[in-house]
Amino acid sequence: MENSSQASRDYTVCPGCDLLLERIPAASDHTAVCPRCGSRLYRARSDSVRKTLALSLTGLLLYVPANFTTLLTFDVLGTPSSTTLFASTLSMFAQGQFIVGTVVVLTGLVFPLLTLSLLFTVSLGLHLRRRIPCMPTMLRWYRHLTEWAMQDVYLIGVFVTIIKMSHMAAIEANTGLYCFIALVLITIASQSAIDFPLFWSRMEPDAPPPPPPPGVETAMEAGLMVCHTCRRIAAAGDGAEKVFCPRCGEQLHFRKPESVGRTWALVLTAVIFTLPANLLPIMEVEYMGVPDRSTIMDGIIYFFQEGSYGIGAIILTASILVPMFKILGLVLILLSIHFRRHGWLRHKAMMFRFIQFIGRWSMLDIFVIALLCALVRFGYLSTVNVAPAAFYFTGVVLATMFSAINFDPRLLWDDAVTPVAREYNYATARSS
Ligand SMILES: [Zn+2]
Ligand SMILES: [Zn+2]
Image (cartoon, rainbow, N blue to C red; front, side, top):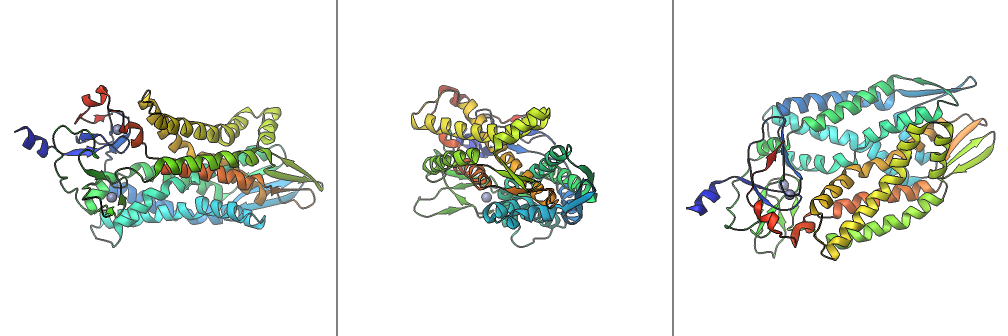
């Protein structure tokens, strides 16, 4: 009797800790979270397809004027200098910084366009109830690329640049800036309008997953794998062959392969890059033919001395505190897995989610330098050039972001079958 009633219950798997949970329908605009680790399970959004379609279309229409019309005009002693967002994005190449330049172009220009286009195509297909080929693949790529589309960080970079230059030049905001602000707001709205479970189930309905045997706690114990992209649950098979998600095509694993080793390697890379990133100069300001090179810390001290405490605090947080927190946090998590310390699990899981969330914001300083290189072109009077630390600093950002991507938070919970966890077996997902 108990078996059949359990089989008929619809369940889901927590992506953060692998716990099997009964699925309850989340009320519109409510979020269901895992009662054990606090990860978000699903979020219901009202009228999601139409809203997403309208917002992504608006975003695409704004993309061209935001990138190709004049963004800002600086005026020093009657010498104007203006730039578009597009030209600023490319400015690192003119400085001979090909790797940093590629990262800036991808995160500031290519991925924002790509994510909007993917979202538009998928929501259009769902709205018209047409099966556009590769729709699940497109939505899968959208999920992977949103973290790397950094137009919001770029916009904060524009504001920092304006404040940074306001002492030295008369600044005029142009059409491009207003379109860019609108583009960023629309993009954020489109990301929050999308109801992923709805989108996925419209493409291919959730097949009723095979019933887990009674008494098991996690998907792995039940021989089930959960897709981290579309959350479909699939049987693991005999383990001899690779398993791919039947809906979106993502490769499935019980746990990400060699997660701990890869995360360690990437964290250590970040640590090594941190030294030159902070000790070498990151920017060179040439004033009246005299070059003045400054490190990240010099730039922060300058703001505090000038009395711009807010902007100094923003740069300090993004460039020094965030990378440091990411590295220390990941080391702490990795060590606690190595030494099998199971205390504070919920806090560690929360810290990991925070590390994932803040990862991209360290790119702020790189965007500011790209903007300054494009804008401060007053010939002999003053120019800004990028200096070697920019390369190492970009390395730190990439290494820490990839280390968070390679880490599997479920490893934290694996050996820790505490009596507390038993309470949550098939517990109802909390809706908030
Ligand atoms: Zn969980
Ligand atoms: Zn999938």
